[in-house]
Image (cartoon, rainbow, N blue to C red; front, side, top):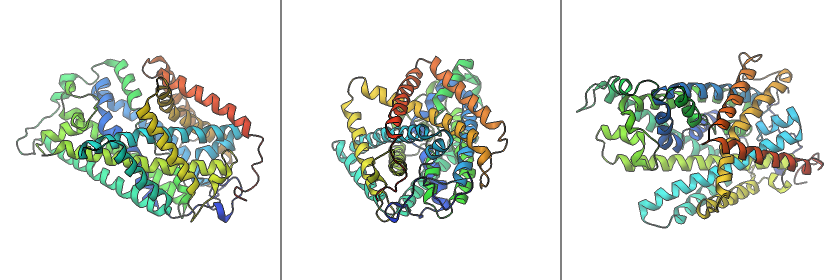
Length: 465
């Protein structure tokens, strides 16, 4: 697996009719990673982990962060050496053969499509409340806007994600500054808080079981930043873009997540912190309410909508590029690999169509089906991370030149693999997460079986020729 920055990872031959562009810059990739990981789950769901573990949730974030950092370093080393719009699906195929690439490609495509449905449904519900209109209207408008964004040149997509992420970062930085002033008693009308709330609850009020439950609640908090390595194939200098993105995204996300959790734990009584179904119940809104900032609920609703729409935009991009690469490999209809203006527009349209199907499933909610699909989504990331780690273990001896290096490459992958298997075991023993593993194993078995139906196809011909 020698350096292949100029190949764009196209393991099948390409032609001008199915080549991607190179319009993304390092700043786009860096902010894209931040934008996909800082979503509504942070603003609404952070209280779930804190409620389970108390202040000890910080240990859970450190463990989860260390696992993701290791996985991203391994993925970054492979992506910098051989950029591909198929990313880990391409490396899985290189490491273990056709079945692994097929499994990873379609598993991640499925994950992003189902999450698309949840994201746009959540955003539409809030916007419908603002204007007093049916929920399908803002959903349709949002899908139409992001269809235009993703059908245009990739640089336009990059700019959208860049500014979306900048706004979210500004919000979190503003929150951290206000929280620090509140804690220090420097905000008007506030006194020094100190560690009174932590002393009241104790560091780990629910003991080790609480920390374990908290780890399950936050284990996938950083999920989504894998899209950075998919997007790298459309940058001018993929190797350097991946290096900069991987080196900067992880610690920045850790800072924002851990900083926000510290602020919430210090400022809010433990009994007041829990998961939130609305912006008004968000721990972020409760902290800002302490500062007597007017309109805080409406502000948090706007931030949550922005986070949901940003994630939806990135997920349409990720699914379209994954479908494009699967078509190049012969694992999807070849017309999905055709490009117009260096954009795989057929793949974009298909992703938008299935995103709408996912939205329809959210509203229809057939008994048992949606639960199974969403449970499978919950387990897709851990399967993806395990396969990335296994692919790196197999391919690392063949990597000759990469701008990203994994320190401790002889032992770190094995420690990461052990941690991921332990996490999967923890999920199996927890009744609330067991179905995630069972569902994704069933889905994975089906995909592996389907891979043998395409394994005999001739993948040597260039798509679209």
